[in-house]
Image (cartoon, rainbow, N blue to C red; front, side, top):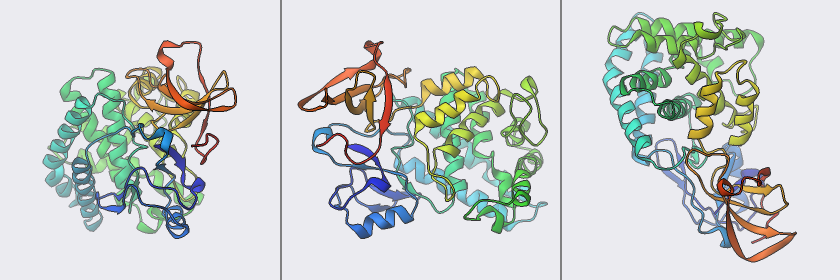
Length: 367
């Protein structure tokens, strides 16, 4: 199957992967033939990319992150905790978090076990979901990315648990932001953005008052918008004044933000998101964290159309663990001609070959 933008869908194409809501319910089944009404609806729902069936790429399967069951449980736990917070005042909110602490800790352990047992690079682009609230899905995605980085950096199990809790609760302070600002569909005004920026400090004070939660978890919420060069907020911390876990979550947070579809901005592809991180590497983001991220996460996801430096075109068919920018390509076009029999080229064993561009439109490579 092949990964293309929703904008490139045309009538008659068939979905290669089911589309679900964030609770795991199937909204559109794999194999369904798309018509104009369905395509229009997908665009309205803000889904940036979908997988379609294509004869010559039917052997290509999307990567995976965590199981549907665990994703449903995770989103449900995050939603229940965060929605409960919105219903309580700041004095009683610590009791809400304390009540959820055991469930969140167990959830982090389950996520770690699944990521650890997954022999593939982490990819969330394959998880085609429609979400009701970006914050719930974002909190889970940042947790998955942060834990993947932590594992790549060989953090100890207890450190991983604290990192995971810090990641899943990094945006908890947003639950006390006025709902009309938090859920505003368009760009924020300067005043509204200043209000949003308060969530880091609000989250810190919420979490530090929960006796069962490690203080470091609270500092993850406090510091995930800080940057090495002091350009972040709320305190403008510099370099080693920022905790290492805050630096990890900062990388995960930015990557998920730029690769998620928003009303005011289309989602970037993973390699484009990585370029944002590399542009800030050593300036805003810790170099070794960015490098660990690159090794852990699929930069060119399965099903993505690519062009190589010698002009050959193909589709990413599988990943090389630890070498996310050197996947295996199923070559479909050579010297401007479609191949009757595609073949695979492993970039990890052909060091002179590089990907020069990506194609998510419907068909520069004909089936």
